[in-house]
Amino acid sequence: MAASLVFRLHDRGPDLVREVLLERGWEEYDEEEREEEDWNLYWRGSTFRNSEYLNLLPWQRLNHHPKTVGITRKDFLARNLRRMRATLGSSLYDFSPTAFILPNDYTRFLSEYNKLRLTRGASVYWICKPVDLSRGRGIFIFEDIKDLVYDCSMIVQRYISDPLLISGYKFDLRIYVCVKTFHPLTVYIHQEGLVRFSTEKYNLTSLRNLFAHLTNTSINKFGPFYKTQKERVGQGCKWTMSKFRHFLHSQDINQNLLWQRISNIVTLTLLTIAPSVPSCPNCVELFGFDILVDVKFKPWLLEVNYSPALTLDCQTDITVKKRLIGDLIDLMNYTLVDSLRTKAFQRQAYKKSCFHANFSSDALIPLLPKLKEAEFQKQGKGGRPSQTLPKLKPTRHFEKMNQRPSKLANNQQRFPSVDFNKGGIKTHTSTTLNLMLDPHSRSNVSGVNRQTCPALAPWMRVNRSLLQSEVTNCDETETEAETELPAQTDVSCSIHDLPKKRLGFRWKLPDINRRSNKPEGVPFEGNEALIGHHAPPLRVGDFIRTFPFNAATLKASQHELEVKVIIQELHKLTGQLAKSEKKKRKRKEEEGKDRDGEEDFDSLLWGPKDPPLISQCLKHN
Ligand code: ADP
Image 1: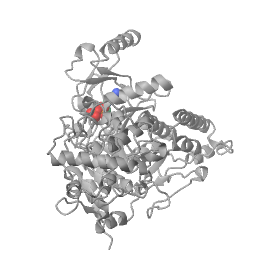
Image 2: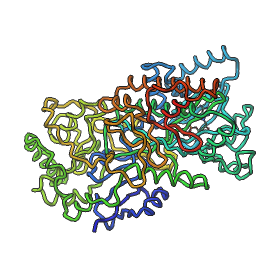
Image 3: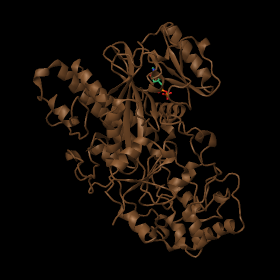
Image 4: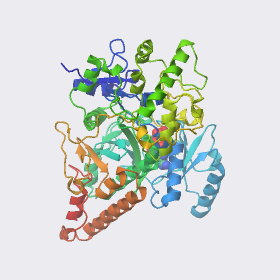
């Protein structure tokens, strides 16, 4: 009989993921009982090690894509957005408050501070946040530069001092975003989400009162008014997004444009890193985007959380997060049982080459003994990796493997499912290949520990200081980021000239993005405009596909990411929506008159109830 699916949780958490998966009949991984590779989904709050990506087996998935720190750490995000602003124009990337990274940008900050003070008077406020902390820790707001005191790397940001308030309380929106793949970029936003309130009324005369200025639950739950019934907001400090939408609806506020702008922010933010994220089809990621809406209904991106909190503090959390995780699992398209894993383990096939059949190049074979030799040299001589090596515990699999040195094929099995062909890092492909196959190559002299880490890909060889607090916007736990020690940064290699076909060791992974295998009960809706383009489902549970949103963006994200085309389409869509919203306001009674013949968009928009298709919104306006 086929075995259940198996999940593995790092540090025994989060409980919610365990609960949802157990309810669905999954089993929890137990290292005493199972082989090291005998699991389907590995979930952790902190980053995975490079070797964990490289050693992924066909049936295994991870809950993080590699190399997303470019948006999840406050200073990296600020830098990336600044770069995009410089390249693509400040009007497009105007959704994040001006930011400076201290101490480096201090002079620039000073000149901006003085400029604004002169032109706008004294009422400009700033918020200062440690770059590598989360949950409101170490944050303060100031107006006068003499109050700017810091002793670590900080980001100082324009404080949005005119937030939209509900009964005098400030709030922000926690938007859950799932990036199913970066190649092609496929993004879903969960229709449900959280609205997080401060617990004291907003007041610019008391900048030190964090209960009035910060909306973090981790802060407000310790506030004196947390449990009090607050006017309209109620008890506690959270609403579901549905409640918020109903509220807007009850105020006769048209939300379409707001949600479209939020969706644009998500897409534009992801575009800043998408070209540099290596393709890893076995990864999926849930980000928490924090959005503040100002009085003019302009949404602002505050930050992107790497591991959004899945703790259940109140009934609102239970309502939102349980469904969220359920939908995320549905989005991963698991079948009820994993015959691939089961068969591999029943026949011990996982110890054989997983991708031997795909391994078309004979030319690679002569290189493999070198790899084996290198491994056994290290083993036999009790060779110790140099200090720059990643400190990794040999897996059980490798212990076994090394007892049977003649089984060369075992080495092949460990090759990565990470696809270095994607992400605009083409030159790295051959480098990586070199690292994996030729232990004597120049770029390999740093001595990657091949017992457990067949290759340290060049893109992972970033400066250690950059990696140290990679998981800073992880509001789940305080787990430290686990990082590999860096290898040398010299990625020059001698194998650039290998013919392309020799690079054919992307073995066939189970396609977690397949459409044919639609999970039960998951509706696949309105793909009219994308027919023939292999469009991912529009909606899975409450996850709504926001990218690609039409045929042009689907095409522009299929191969090399065509950022300019995508941006044009975003402009077009937002422009059309804005125009139609304006018309709608002016001539409500003339609904449906002049939209016929407009381009069809299949993405969905949020509304108070079920989200309509954008195309429907346009037609009806
Ligand atoms: P953390 O990672 O510590 O939660 P955030 O950037 O999310 O840091 O900031 C915490 C809170 O501070 C936000 O939830 C929001 O209420 C407030 N905040 C942050 N930046 C700004 C800003 N630029 N303008 C107004 N409020 C902000």
